[in-house]
Image 1 (cartoon, rainbow, N blue to C red):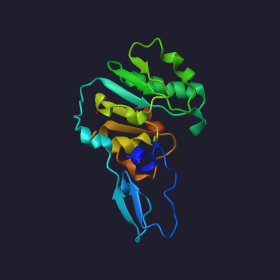
Image 2 (image 1 turned 60 degrees about the vertical axis):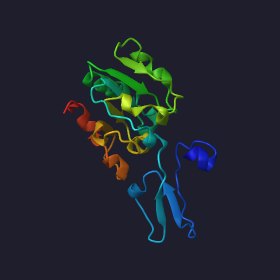
Image 3 (image 1 turned 45 degrees about the vertical axis):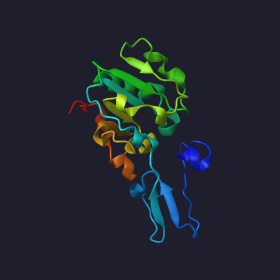
Length: 191
């Protein structure tokens, strides 16, 4: 919808505004806005993906991981590498596709080039343009792309959000399967 409303696709809007004369807010998931005013009407912006009517394929054997830039959590390359190794090892008989974050050093993923079950997408590819229904599971690290995924009929429990510190208070992350980083080592993705 944003190309029609704003003449370009907006990936992120930080603030909707607090001007007292605002009486209508349009959002992709208005029910999940953390703070609402009694004097404002909230309207849903319909997703273009909803009209596609796709079916979830839980046997696709493809896993999508939306990565995170090191600077977001102060991670070193070795710590981050271990997180990805753990995720890849969790899906040995599946194809793991990693979508690097646009702010991320894509050279980091050169380490995985020899892995036969790992594919790395170009970091300039827009996450919201990926067909989510190609994947059995989607894993992210508190990514805003979750808003777009939740707008489709993709099953919410097949979306895994890994929290680096503690769970988020944002409602849309709670709609996914939440995992603390400290629990990742023993987490069973097959259940």
